[in-house]
Length: 158
Ligand code: FES
Ligand code: FES
Image (cartoon, rainbow, N blue to C red):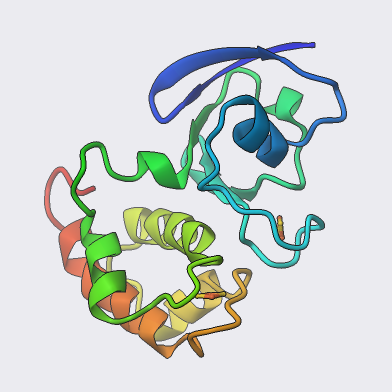
């Protein structure tokens, strides 16, 4: 089946099997391997991308369901070669170790701060509760997201 959507602002069209899930479409058809696959059944959050601004698990939806949508992957969070304030805060706070969870964490945190730039630590923990990390213990991740809030309060936020 032919499916067309935008990824990181660029229109794309690909022929896919109806059963192909969005994460495999992004990784294997479009070579956007920043979207990671862990559990492949909706538990770990590693595959989280933004679909029309909302965080979704790309392993739980078919690529054909994204027809006409606007998708943002971790590769599209920064529009140039610099780190976004959220990414810079992750680096500063050592909010990643192996980095496997990081694309999904960044996508979920970006969606949260875009909608709720005043989110407190409890709200951040709640919003990221669907993203599992086996390395950090979560505290530095929450600290990074707390710090990044200031950037999302400014006009023209990331
Ligand atoms: S790979 Fe999609 S939720 Fe784990
Ligand atoms: S940094 Fe390794 S799983 Fe989160």
